[in-house]
Length: 88
Length: 459
Image (cartoon, rainbow over all chains, first blue to last red; front, side):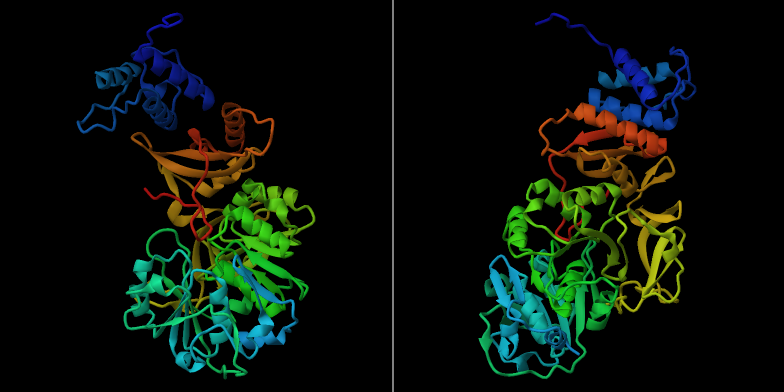
């Protein structure tokens, strides 16, 4: 049953989605690292909106929809941590 | 002249009929005959509401009572029974005509209940018809309680002088309920033009209706684009062979026009712009979506059209007089124009409908009309119907998503992933990024309201 099975981290899912959305929207991505400001990554706000919706569908997490106030993510690292925090 | 006078003037050959799923009635039998149980005196000068399960009893009652009653209130099949008391009070109804006495029990208030849709009996009487009856129609809006709009036989028959050449032997039909404006237009064409009328019937399936239309030799038929998409999906569209196919009530995009052209290669295909309030403004017969820009601002035509802030406005003698309830906003502006709420855009000498003013989606401050995106989706040959809607987004307020009904009639059907990749490529080529659906979802069917229009959920 476990053949070909590997643990996919939230980080992997987010990075994969970013690459996919950028390709769909014809955007060229900067090299992705945690310090990179999200809106300088090559994604515009429409891309981020689509990314958030895709992640909601794939992970059933929308960290923006909760009751508590969140610090709006500035960098890619902030964005990933927001999802990691929402997961637990 | 009253409606019956027009019917008679067009000729009463024995084959002229009005039919629904329960059968046909020959119009000649109404000469000196009646489908009503009561004496015509009961209705003289009165406000009469017609609430029947079938459409045929309503049509016969209209033919008999126009010119006799002060007011005729036409209830479409889907008007909820619980709204009847309010309607009766608002329209000051004296007599409620029905073919189903049980269905209106306890709902008539002070109005007298009288049966309609009886077997036609001969009376030998020709009633005097010298009253200008008011015709009250319900708006076809899919949100909120529909409003009552005041028309007259003159405003309802105004659009018939549009140069369309029709044989007096024509057999007309419509997917619409003829108690709505879109359907009533077609009924008037049949009754005043000398033709027959095949009525749709909520008691039969779409395939059964199409088969009946074919068997009765329907030559002219109308419906909304949603009606037509469903007809094409039913697999029974080829049961009839019309000469004339008409679309109205929703935006006719190139996808549905092309599909109808393919299904009925010999038919004239026209799409009309009409609303309960504005009447028929114009029709387009060149098989292309949108309408020629020369129509806007043209003088001397039956209807004047102007575009203000991108919104289509109409002035003509076919406009409704107004809303019955004075509490509703005025239907016409100071210049006598009706604001349709339909947004149009000019491209290459042609105006295209891009959507409803109130239905637009706001993506990060940029406006998207669902209909303009649907028009692109519907161009794909495997797309039968689509509905574009807003998905709330914490980032941009909303993003555009779409539900798609895929054709299932063809044998070699690619999977949805392949189709959606093609659709997305088309969208990216034809639409700016904020209008491109972020997600496509395959659905089995999309709900179409009784008015024939796609049901659009409101956020």
